[in-house]
Length: 266
Picture 1 (cartoon, rainbow, N blue to C red):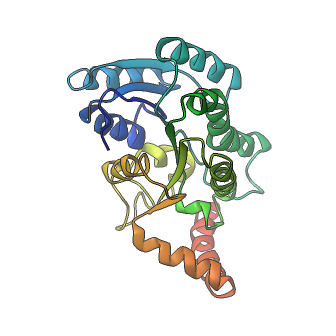
Picture 2: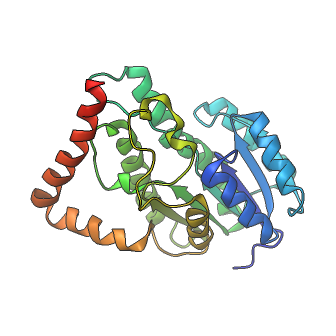
């Protein structure tokens, strides 16, 4: 697809998948809106993109705060009128058992990962529908299909993202606006820098680069599909889990519980 002069808004744009996506869209000639809580990191990304992007707008915003999202959206819409592509990428996890997590830690993951997406969609979707074009890309995880010990609240937020996206996709039929979820396996980003992951192996041998997921996001921005799983071979595992849950769930539960038990023993 030709992204030249298209307006692309990316949340969680200060690092990892968001930053990699911004670079790729910029190289395609898109106008980039960078959204993140960390202004210093955003400005660094802006500095890097200045060499390749025709237009960059930096918006410091915590997407878990609906008032901040409203203010950010007002700034964007006053400048551009609408966006062509909304990339909901902001998200994080805290690794621990539900019994050890505080209510606030559980709520914070849902607030950023799920409600942050909802707030952005609610603020930008009306203008996309009005112009009868645009695409929403929600960056989830294969955790949207597997409930795993140690990241139960994170899984819940991604299950919610996928379910919301599926329902909204039906509602958007005939409007000219599309929606696609990108669900990668483990990605080598600062996602795992949170102190709760310090007792875990950093990355698995099968983990993906941020660039690989960013390529999937560009593909998703022009896809009629509901979900793109990265890598595609993992779709077979999702099918197995859905078709034979009595077989797959005990295996996964046991494997991930061992790692959680190690953390709790340390």
